[in-house]
Amino acid sequence: MRYIAVAIAIAAGLMVLIGYFVPALAGVQSVLLNWAIILAGVAALVGVFNLISVHGDKVRRREKGSIYSAILLISLFASFIFGIALGPDNPNMRLLVSIVIVPVETTLMALLSVTLLYASIRLLRRRTDLMSIVFLLSAVLMLVASATLPFGEISPLNDLVRPWIQQVLALGGARGILIGVALGTLTTGLRVLFGADRPYGGN
Amino acid sequence: MNLIGLGLVGFSAILLLALSLIKRKSPPKWRIIPAFTKLSRAMDLSVEDGTRLFVSLGRASLLTPRGGAPLAGLGLLRRIAERTSLSDRPPVAVAGEASLALLAQDTLQAGYQAMGAGDLYQPSSGRLSGMTPFSAAAGAMPIIRDENVSASMLVGDFGVEAALLADVAERENTFLLGASSDISSQAALFASAQEPLLGEELFAAGAYLDAGASHVASLTVQDVLRWLIILALLAGAVLKLMGLI
Image 1 (cartoon, rainbow over the protein chains, first blue to last red):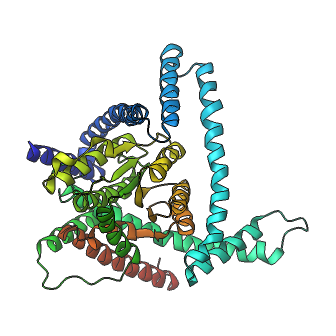
Image 2: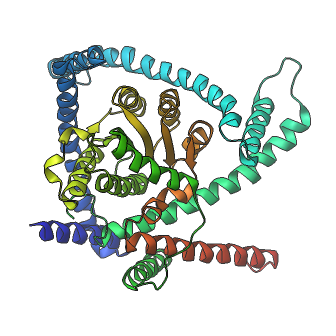
Image 3: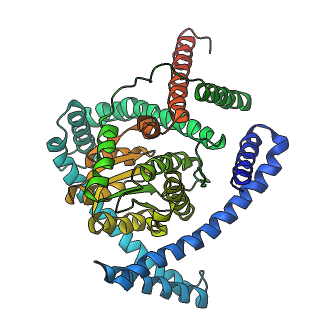
């Protein structure tokens, strides 16, 4: 059974990959990708059950922080019931989502700015090396060059230094990193395709 | 253009297969990445002192081009499951995407079974922490804080929200390795993580942690391809300078 699963996974992976280069296989590729999307939808449902199971256990065992798990479960079931009763496109349902999820995520984003500032301050205590100093200096430079200052812009900083750092150093570095990530993705994908790595189970 | 892509993939595949099958006479030598040395030690320590390892795989779907990073994370998770399968406290893996959470469960179970400890596997050790980037981060933060975690690994595709997890790890005084395929997240992790990994270092975990010949071959293929790209870029620059392209 395990070998059949591996064979199916490898065959499907190969067909999707070849479909990008051979137009004759584009139809098969499209069908397989559609199946994958449907499976991902089912996985979302299973994932929600996993969420309920983990937090339900926490509430039952009265673990530390179980009150938050209880709130999560109540909110989840309330959203589910309202969603079923009203439909996801109902204006009240949309309002319910936008007055809870959007402000909470915006608050986390605001917290993140403080967290990153604090982390930058602690960076030199954690790692005192050249890269950390360059990182902090470039971050401060970019902030000063981008900020609206009360006495107006610092002309050479805004007109020359900032564009040069952004378009030469940062862009070049970012492209280098992305090439590295792309090569890593390619070889990781090939390992999965050959069955050397099997994240879908099996030894 | 399609042919160049197909050629690159075909060349990489042949090279990967050949290098995986050829037995090396001496072990490969790479530059030292301190993060992996510390991670290896953290894994051993967690078994000895009965603490837990925490792995977050990020929020990317495997159906998108960003799916490579979580696959690398799953490879690392498999290695962790194998090395800590006899620990009193199993590692916890979370994901911000449902199919990834299921694969994390499967990977953990496969790791336990490979070490003959399948009955010690707990399904709750692979979890979905949230369905949006920030809710996934918020769902993972209490695990680092409350579940006796001694080392955390963020390996996958994250946004800047990874810094929130790094902050909790720092507050709890636990080791944190941060690796993401996203540039902004790498910047955030560089500032906040104890051991950040940049760029392709994310994909080197398996080779550095002795996960097998295919991981070693994979790293060599990346090096070969990198040199080819460097040569192509230099050739392009020279031809442009000469006005030929």
